[in-house]
Image (tube, rainbow, N blue to C red; front, side, top):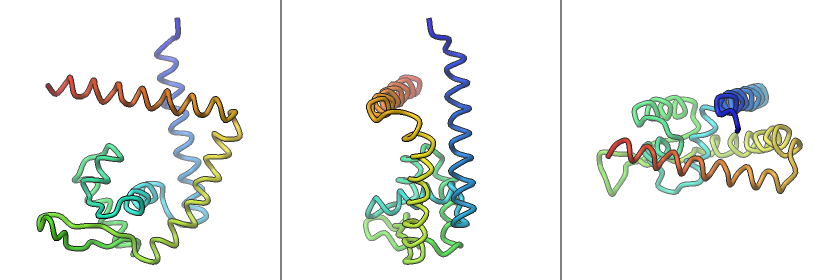
Length: 149
């Protein structure tokens, strides 16, 4: 039987090591922390993006996300626009500078993922791993919904 504690520890330690490697490289090459790259990536992919959308996708609180967006905005990488559908919220978009840095940092991000994941495992294994993580996340969301019911 699989030792689930060992699996947990390996999974968490690997996530931390991977995060640190990507973060270090983004900061070194682009002066952009991974904590800024992730929300910027969401903004770029989602037209009409709101703070709530980033919070939902990244699994963090709306309050924390709002403060994070404040810092990204202060860096000049995004801006808030009035939301015509809801005056209580803003729409987010990347500035031209934000788009350029995200594109450059995106190439670095992809390269580091290739080093840590793509070079370590065959494509078939990566596809299976991605499917397994997807199933685990879906199961976790179901458990969370049960806990709140």
